[in-house]
Amino acid sequence: MDVNKKFELIKRNTEEIIGEGDLKNLLKKKKEVSVYWGTMPTGSISIAYFFHMLKIADFLKAGLKVKILIADLHAALDSVPWIELEKRYDYYEKAIVMILEIIGVDLKKLEFVKGSEMQLKPEYMYDVLQLASLSSVSNATKAASEAVKSAKTGKVRVSGLIYPLMQALDEQYLDVDIQFAGVDQRKIMVYAREFLPKIGYKPRIEIMTSMIRGLVGKQMSSSIEATKIDLLNDEKIVNRKINNAECVSGNPDNGVMAFLKYVIMAIKKDKKEKFVIERSEKYGGNLEYKDYEEIEKDFVGKKLHPLDLKNATAKEINILLESFRKDKKIQELHKKAYS
Image 1 (tube, one colour):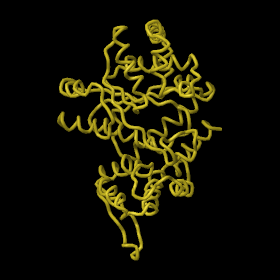
Image 2: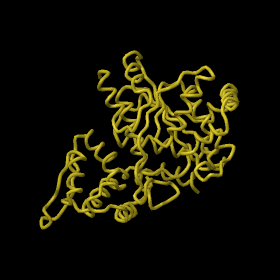
Image 3: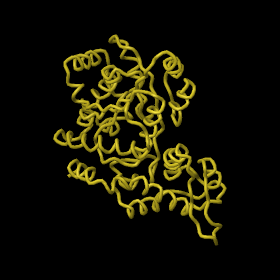
Image 4: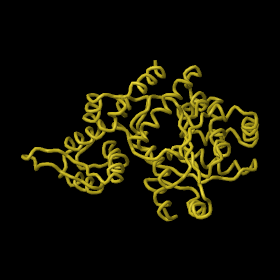
């Protein structure tokens, strides 16, 4: 794959790239470019993870070395009980691999890293203290404001101030060229680019995607059940949640359309498949779409009814989740992690 095709694949469905020019040069000069994505093993994983994993799949297809940091210490700093960390790590690793297998991508260049195995080393903690000595409370609070639970509530714990310092250092200690995250991590990424050079480390390229809409409200939330679909929800629950999702006729700004755009149609496009909406002949018969823009055009023009759209979307989600319902191992790990 040539550099331009790699770049377009890496950039697909992203919100912002800090250091976009550097990325192009890096792809030209470096044989194997590396990227990391970090996730905290907190709540039970929702279908929103398909959105993140499609981007991981793009990186792998572009030939990048991908490291997934399962940040157990970050989860503890963000209020997960320490005793639960190991069980949740096991569940997260298995679930992420299953999602990538469903998407269909070669995992040879994928590596998992457990945060505590890297972050408790003396040299890492020494650098945390270095950053702490250079950062004001205001610097750390600002960086954490969109990403850390306690910071969002306004009751910032000391752990919430340590969190962004560690995420910045993860770039260095994972030895990567790029960090990938949601746009809610932007302030931490900007902090990393500003402060890592102050302790002798190079700034990295920062790639961000938008936050996927919730079924109800603006964002999927692990703490608000109505906003999300869990990987282990059964078919009836999926159908009910999609049926109850916000989806006003003619208005594409909703969670159903967002999931369709960024997940279902991205998968369909890569597999060269069409999205089929089944309708009886008296309502015009079935509709077939090869790209999202066609769907949105018909939905905005009110040629596509919200209920028909919901039914077809629920069917596709249930197909994606079929493997999770059949896999006894993932169910066992989930039960242990959230008992």
